[in-house]
Length: 219
Length: 153
Image (spheres, one colour):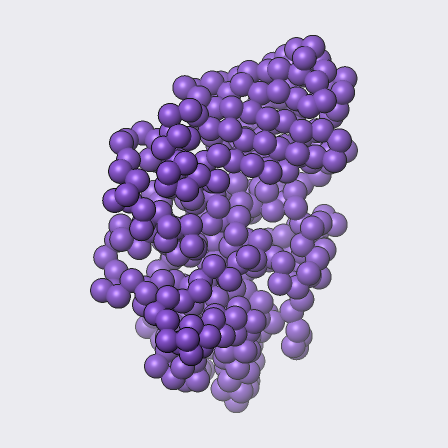
């Protein structure tokens, strides 16, 4: 079983014309694109525009994404920028009070989307942190080796599947599921995206600050 | 950071599940758009790519944004040997090619939209953006041949 998954290899294959590699990228990173767009509370039509723009532009820029961390960063930054464009463009058709909307805008620009437009936890810091953590987890999930990612996705099913069912679906021994699950979660926990977030939280906590530094993710 | 469940396997699984479920309703359109995008791979690949270098809509902070609303939107695409600056205002896009030169402009839509117009001898052009988004500009001029990044107007 393949224990490794190389983002750079898949990116290179897609650039060379391997359509299966491209579809693999799309399947893996769709939740991340959707998550960034979700943070901005865009309407369905705007999400369609953002997604099309991000993917079309990615096709043209595959050749520049040879570093291992480059693809998730590129996807987060590009999706966020497209969302900010739509967010700002929607402001063009009605009057704006820059002072009143400043915090929502700043939050969007900082990378979390205008949290105030929906029902959110009372603590905006906690909400921002949660959005950043979800994006980090989805980026990490996208980089798991295929058998680990497939297992995690099956473990997400609601209602939960039995190990016997999972064993049949993935065609693996029941006894291997527990260890594979443990290795996958270990990998998620140690992924660079989450580590960066954890470091930034630890740094700001050490300084006694309440504001987390979210902008590091995706830059 | 045990309060955020960094160390607990079940907590991480739960959080991944929440993150996925939160975007479940958007996953399908995002995936479909991604699958379709690859058909554009290699189209016009002989042309140089002019990447989006500036967009007043993105650059604008709250204060600048008010100006952007009043004065339309400015975009700059730059490539290795040429660039394109465009302004979008009141439903019309007006642009200029640098270095200037006469040629043809093709507006390409991701959905297959296709419209052509003239680039005049000083590199100026104009077009009405289609409802279909995103689009990109393909310029074939005496001075430079290029295709821009995809963009939504």
